[in-house]
Length: 419
Image 1 (cartoon, one colour):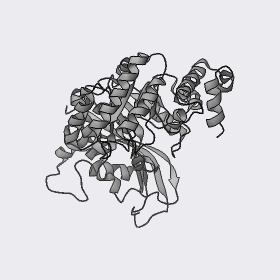
Image 2 (cartoon, one colour; image 1 turned 90 degrees about the vertical axis):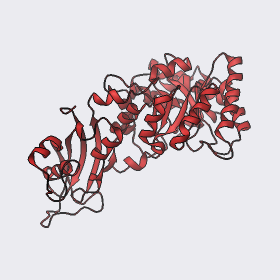
Image 3 (cartoon, one colour; image 1 turned 45 degrees about the vertical axis):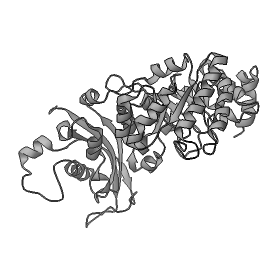
């Protein structure tokens, strides 16, 4: 273990030189502080100190991106930007996600020498694989449980997000299951509220799922939102599994990566990982974290399905950023850790083509709330239109051409394609 290192890549902005900023990051996050202290020997620094592995200059700015930086006394008015790679000895923290984050994303965000900082990526040694087994189901397990092969897993989100009683929810799920949906998930806003306790919701939903399966021969996957305090996770998970459920959902930022890893130690069904609150960590281009780094930690901790936003969505994120997120989820990681990217937000049949063009794969979960539920001819037609959108995308047929012989797709274009 003593020879293994974690390499963190950062986008840095500084009123100092990039070399000085990199050295400050390496020192602050390992053996150093603002002044020399007794015991900080050369031998100690050699064994435990972080090391600057590379610096790539990217340009300069005329003003700081973030408040609170303190330029040197004779500052030339330039704020230098670049990518800095710093390596940390694994024996400083061991294969522990919480302690890893303290090293690579700790107090360095508050340093006066920096006017911008963003964690771009992490290179992790094999030791993390021994402690964190990652997804138990991933893409293959999700496909096996849904019975869907050769195309994306298509589904929707319960809408309205809040306010449905268990009885009303049961009616909605029955309608959607009979419409042929592969997958339905709770909204992240609806976990275990007093007006619809999780136990009652699970019972009502699973009764509808089973009744629909008796009629259609297809049992859809429903992701129950079991987000809660750590001591609630096992109880909530067990409630779902005992009722015959095949998926649980958690808000990763709410329960933390340690909460996700804990859930993965006993989970018997796929874990649908929602990234709500992610924007506060990434929306500023010179602050926070790139999804490329975050998704690796989610995969290690056991996310079988992971949200990546959607192309042409209602959110601020650029399509280029969404594409990077989709690609990141399926990039090699320690020889495995297959996680299914979940595309959602303002999706409809017309977003299938750009999604397929970007991913060049059907190994994706494509969710549409209003894009299915609000179809002019109802949810069944909405589901059919999504299937048709993907058929056109995979075959390389323009959407309007394919729609000429597919009325559900044509009607979807008429409603959603105007924007």
